[in-house]
Amino acid sequence: MRLIALLFCPFAFTTGAFVFSGVLEPMAAAFGTSVSAVATLQSAFAIACAFSGPVLAQLTRGRAPRALLLVVLILLVFLNGASGMARDFHMLFALRLAVGAIGSLAFPLATVLAVAGLAPEARPKAVAAVYAGIPVALIVGIPLGSVTGNAFGWPASFFATAVICAVAALLVWRFVPAVPVVAQIEPGSAASSRFGPGIYAHLGVTLVASTALFALVGLIGPAIRATTGFGGTGIAAMQVLAGLSSLAGVRLGTALVSGETRHALLVPFGLLALSLGIVVAPLMAGGISALGMAAMVVSVCTGPAAQSSTGALVQSRLAGLAGSAATLAFSLNGSMIYLGQGLGILIGATAFSRYGLGAAPASGLVLLLPGVVLALLVAFRFRPDTRVEGA
Image (tube, rainbow, N blue to C red; front, top):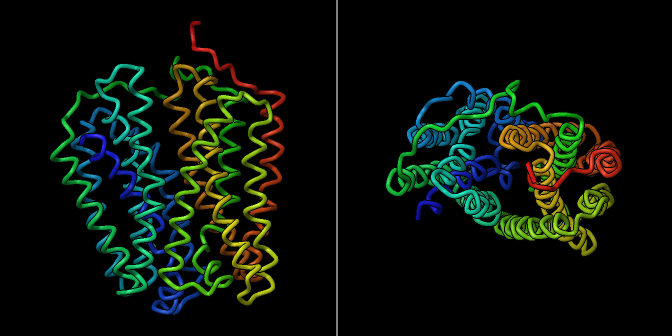
């Protein structure tokens, strides 16, 4: 039950990040602004999380992780509830910045509590159990937000998230025991001395992949509606499909790691290119068609799988490259994911506002080009040493 309680933490946080993605149009109408402007709320959330995570982790060093996690979850309850009561767009924007900044501690703290006291061989299973909260949010939490928001109005999406955060806090309070404060690896310490070009190249891969995908994902609600005509329930069903795709991507990434293929990173980049490229023409053409519907299904099935497989590959290789500084590397990799999400949404929304909905995935395709270069550089210059340190 302890791991289930901790799984709820990234589940609640990830749900809150994109819970309103299926109600962008009603929100835009309510605030008298554009859909692309409302989409930047997701960008603000992700960028705040990317920059605040490492800073807050440093500022809260030495604090009891269980108590700190409870404080974070309780603050998320109030901030998400306040988001549903926002009376103007600027107030909502500020609230989403605050949720992203404070919530950035949820996943790291849950991970610390999950592995506390466990033998080294048991830790990967515990981490995987907590990480499962992220795809579960894609399968359950975010689609629930779309259905709730379309049925009862967009504020209901945020109120639902507040309830989920409250449940997470209650579960942590009831089932997660307090653990001693553990030492953390700091930048500049001897443990971080193995950082070099290979690690930074892999972090760049994560940033590019996340940015490219979210140029479309940030506008997934309008994109699904434009190509399929689906409303709230249909959009939620597509979001569930995206979550299942994400789970499949984790297995794909694990298989690619096991195969130790030099060019393994090119596989998810190929899937990303397919996910983005296949919907450009239907979105630019406009109108609902069987071809557009099929293209969107393919896109939803391949994009999340590509990102998850990239994550599995990069995380595994960072462990081999960073050695004892792996914790620091994982933290930075998480920042790259959130920064990429924020930048991707911002770029996609800008392209949409200037050139139409089809320009969002087209901009993602352009962004993929430096990622392919990095993937090739990783393959030929920075192949990780997967041996256990000291072997």
